[in-house]
Length: 159
Image 1 (cartoon, rainbow, N blue to C red):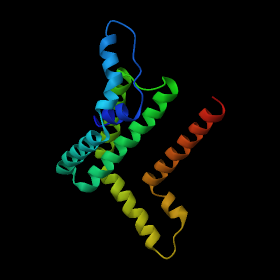
Image 2: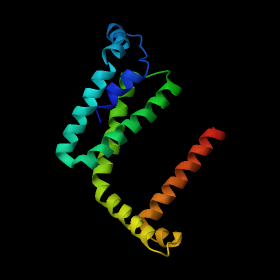
Image 3: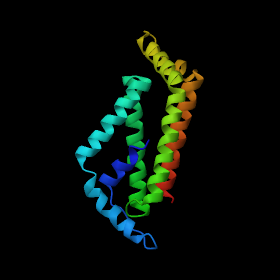
Image 4: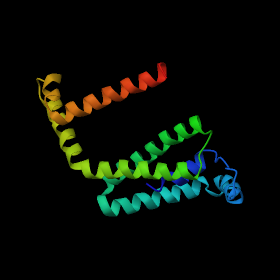
């Protein structure tokens, strides 16, 4: 989850705050150029290697992808609301990425079982969507996606 901070520092503008710690924030504005693409690749590789040791290559690849996706989405939100990122925002992004990663780790066996059951349904000759929808995990996921799309549409068009 801590991979999100160097990713956001490299890809987004840092917003300097005004206050007693202003000299530190001026340094953070320049830190974007210290966190080069090469250093970001090294940080990603280290995170991937550590996750591979703990969870295996497939789960770790998904974990890194989830963390970078959440960081990207949070960065978009930071650009929209703040015009970039700042220290508290980076800290909250790390927390959200940790929640996403821990949720995936705890649910990975259920996700794999659901994926395999969907694959079995597609392998059968008489595939019907109603058979897939009867699976409670798939139904809950389907409802979550529909609710997320409805919320996104509401926020986009209504406000």
